[in-house]
Length: 193
Image 1: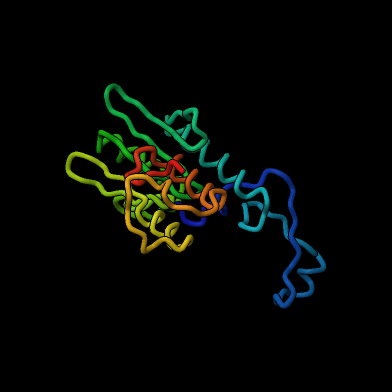
Image 2: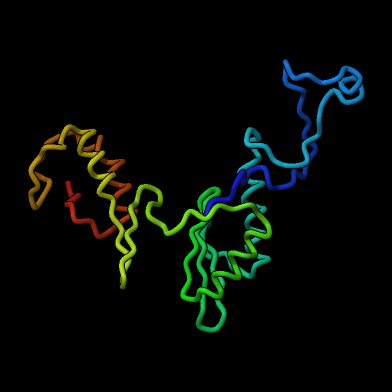
């Protein structure tokens, strides 16, 4: 689910004023009374905007009885054997549950607080393709791997059991390799250079 204009939702706690933009037609008498405008809500251009949004959504999820886990972006609500898990990434929320009734309750609570767009069943998340099968969920980074191969001019290479036969600058690949290792430990590509 995507929160529409997420950074515009939270209230601004400190006093922040903005000037009128040049070219904006504002009556002179108004400009004389109020040479600047006080912000009551967040704006995307504020450096505080991400923190304001994160604090606001954290408070909302807490009011909906979700507990913040050790991970900074993971929230869980458990009722008897039912649970809802929410993963938060900026203004996108991934919701999963073993109970459609509990999931519906949480979705309604979120929609009461924010204007949201349901993006449907999860298919991509942070460069990871998600395929939901009948009895499993498959994660793949095929697209990322192909982009890495293309970046290093290896898109036409033949697969082999170990990549140690390939010689190129190890440090160039290290960032992409580290990303792949951290996101999916069970890769079907050998990454041990």
